[in-house]
Length: 243
Image 1 (cartoon, rainbow, N blue to C red):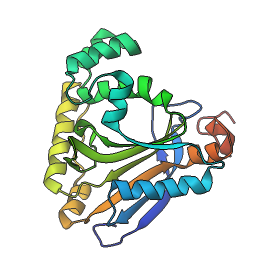
Image 2 (image 1 turned 180 degrees about the horizontal axis):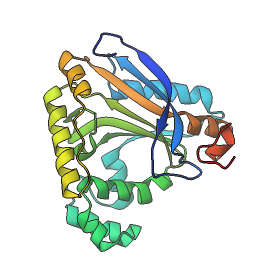
Image 3 (image 1 turned 60 degrees about the vertical axis):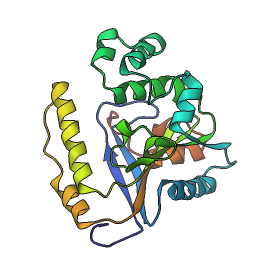
């Protein structure tokens, strides 16, 4: 739709993620997603914050911080300059990761483990974490601030991820290279190969302009607004529940 020239769009839809289940994870969940033409990730963060201000009463304490600052302050190591070996040793010591798993894990995996276990649980209030490491760029642009970063952000409410946003990558050649790198990583891990998304690549080749997009976990936002900590309490039909 962006490549077709339709801007400032949104959708409410179902999303599916196999392998996660619990109070804050269901295999089927509702997602609110929107894109804004002419926005970067910082401008979009302000809009997401305005939405949360409308929904969450009383308004929680809010903070914006870069990934590197938060990671370094919490763990005492720099996420970019620390070697993969040292990150693995920290994951073994602090997170109980098995040595053979740490040896096989990619740099991105190790950063994700450390962030999920040692950083995220301590985020009381509403946190906007921005400018992630380049190895976690996904579909976001990579650029330079005081360091090379992926122009994306995530929103956490009392340690729970609520939203994930990107200043969208519009370069088709960079995106194809990332897909090839992902396939190489899957091969290293012995995972099945998947065909590149040629529809996405064709859209990027046609051009989407300067646009930022975000996805918000709607079930989690509704539960938080009602002071509930189990997604099943806000759903009429729970995925996988016995009839």
